[in-house]
Length: 402
Picture (cartoon, helix red, strand yellow):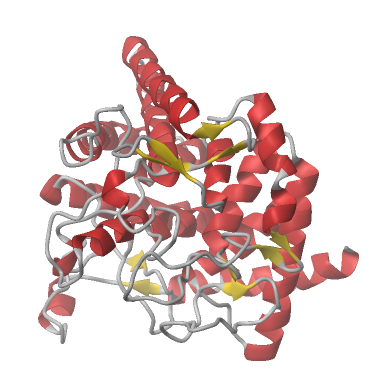
């Protein structure tokens, strides 16, 4: 463990120097010079999804939340503040945090994690001005986008939809709003489902709004948001918990049945404090299904693809994704399974350190079963990646070495 700590400390110190070099801008000059002519204005510099690498140069929705965690771990709150202000400006203009700052993302968002960013930043900085500015805009996004008719369902949980036509089947573009493009766990049509990831993020959203309201002195408003979070939590326990299996599954509200595909999305219920203590224990007992030699795979096996366009799905076995490791390890730690969280963090950090030595890069995702970057029938080569891979290194290392 001493050797791992020294290796982690060395690379973590290097990663801390990357943030300034990873910054992009989307100012008027950038927009004029954009070869695609689709770049959207942002008032402040931002770290893109891919960081300084060529992949994904936009400011994405959920990627930015994980990047914010890495920046706070590295004591860069001023950069997180810029990210928050950029995303609040999107809500002002478009009513939501866009999937990314490109014109072709006007019609969908990504997992609703901005409120959690405000909460983490607010706890770190005690910046009351940001809280006052953020509250009405976050409330607007929660109520008028995530609970609007196109996301609301009759059972009281939210679904995902893309309101535009980007040349993909609407089932595919709507699935991309979860960030999980593409996976087997929605059986091909997410519009009939109430995704665990989305609804757990909305529970954290409501709790964050309660925290903001409380800090602004609005006690009654805060209590209303807490009740809203508890309402949604109870619905997830009602529809998505399977007591026979001891696990949370996605729920198809049209067919009124659970989808028996095992994924790490169940561990979002630990992260969002949805699972009861008994449910948390049973979920933790299922870790061996997902835990590979080098970390957690998103699913425990390869499931058949529900999408005829794709024979293999990147959000499945044997892919180990940095953001899912952050969520799962934070969730396990919060639920009292700290040793499990540390063991998993250590496995994943060891893999990232070794492959960084071999290649000189961090990567978007990893094959955690074989400990390499090889994936069967991958649609594209795995890109070098700072972004959430840098963040996972910082966050998981501090969990393992507090």
